[in-house]
Image (cartoon, rainbow, N blue to C red):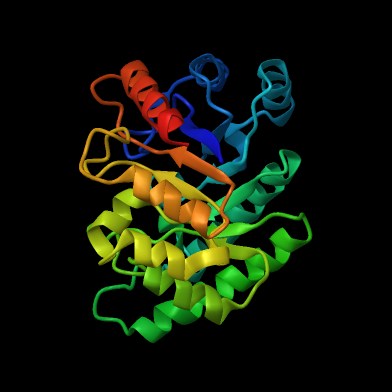
Length: 269
């Protein structure tokens, strides 16, 4: 397994749950100095990143960009696949396509978290699902032409009312039936929604394409009550050997959080 660190540009709001919100060149250098294998870029749109400049940086530091996350497309641009207004759904799809294009330049994948949207109040779930499936099919077909995978991340009930547990995610991925659509478990959300993190991971099996790590309090792994030794053993048992990326609060401070996370996880992995 490789260890990744979620970062965002300085323009990102605190709603981007990353430790480093600063100039990407600084964040990438710091990730390398602390010993991470890759950096996950949290973007609100494709224009936030200079592909050539980032390519030079990752070459300089021998570090990878395995994923671009899109939570900020929802939290900052207020776009989603289930939005009641068609123009907003269309803009969400185009924004995702633009980000997929950028991801392809790094041989990276793209996450689908809160950008999937909510079930609007007093509207049927089936209506939201129909809009979601339509958008996902369009985006996944586009991503397939760029050799990019879309990774569906279940998010806890306090942040969305649509696709909360890994169990729900498995069902959605099976219904979509797209080779380049997989699951992205996040231990913080699973601690809230899944009766057993271990059982859910084993059930998801080869549908898992990427993993987010945060402890029960969203601090660095090792600072809460989750059993990461057991979680990592379970991932190894199902044959997962991809990235486990730290997406945590910058507590007690960004540098210390990053240091605690890698020190703890390297000791287990």
